Amino acid sequence: MADKKKAPRKVAECDLSPLFRRLVAPCYDHISGQLGESLFELLQTRQWIRRVPGSNDFEITPEGGRDLADIGIDMNRLKTSKRKPVAACVERQGGKLYPHTGAHLGTLLTDRLFELGWLKGKGTKNYELTEAGMTGLKLLGLKPDWFPIHNS
Image 1 (tube, rainbow, N blue to C red):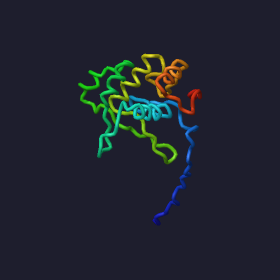
Image 2: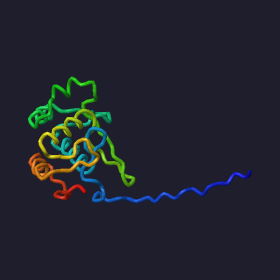
Image 3: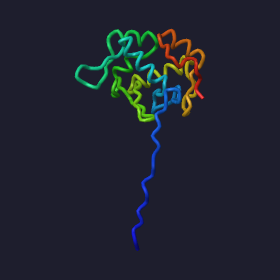
Image 4: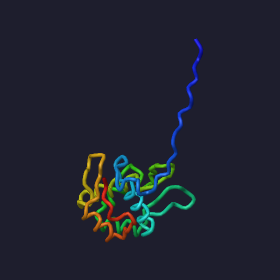
């Protein structure tokens, strides 16, 4: 019996613009999507986290620890956990990589946003940023160009 060769499947490469990315989505136990990426950038801009010199790892700065505690992040829980405190988790879409806050800090931030009512949809695959969340995130200094687009 002759071995029939199948023609290789063509995969369309499409470079989706950020407007086609979800505003906010779950990634394991933390936030990804445009909001996740923007929060990660904000943490670095405000110098709450920084890259460890000579490494791809991140650490929470002393100032970041104080400010994160001020917004309700339990720093004792973060410090005593066996989990890595903070890491860049990467979402891949349209051939591009989008880093967001992962590890234990990513989880604690996500939990805090749900506690504050800034996100809804916990336990589902569809998180939604609320009006209160947009207001609160703006107060923290998050002013992305995609505000006030709602998650669909």
